[in-house]
Length: 261
Ligand code: ATR
Image (cartoon, rainbow, N blue to C red; front, side, top):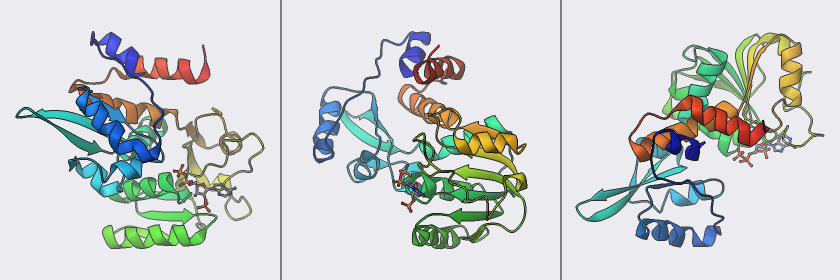
């Protein structure tokens, strides 16, 4: 999607993938700086490690404790590294765009309390959802996030139990659904999909998880995580180039790469 966007904007830039041993991450960032790279994207497990390796942290990275985008910026003959997090904004942009959902005041059931779940929970709280229900196999992790939210966003009501009445959104941030035989991350004995207006699954491969298929049948609005992948990329593109991202071009290229023609 980035290379398609560079081409559209007539930029002689290239987006390349490198596999880096976490032990060599600092050296890799220094190497990119020495080679005048414009920026980097990082994925697991580098997002947490890079947090301590950049010269400056943008507030998006500070809030979520993770860096998925680095910008190399020339200041007075030196090149500084600035760390950003574009994942969190992407969750909200994608939910708004694909599900046409207003998050402020909403009731949200969030499944998963790993890295993605924590980022989603904090971002939703910062968007002033009214109520958050955090469900996770390891309950203590959900409880820890609940405590963090209560401290940082006291206006948001948080529970680690399934809701007793309807919700506006169910958001899956677990990895359940990635593999063909995976069970649904939602315990339907505890909460029926008929009580949800919309369901967003962060998984985008397969395009339709078991959760999304059942949600569709139950009459929910549904969306998968491809929009989130697109939006985090578009944000990073704008940070590096300072130009608006050509979203449609990026979406087409992304879908072609992920799902084929
Ligand atoms: P990510 O960075 O994608 O969030 P992660 O931090 O490993 O990855 O989190 C994976 C999430 O999926 C966690 O919420 C995990 O639950 P635990 O915290 O209990 O490990 C959840 N998950 C993974 N496999 C699961 C399974 N078989 N059943 C239920 N939840 C599962």
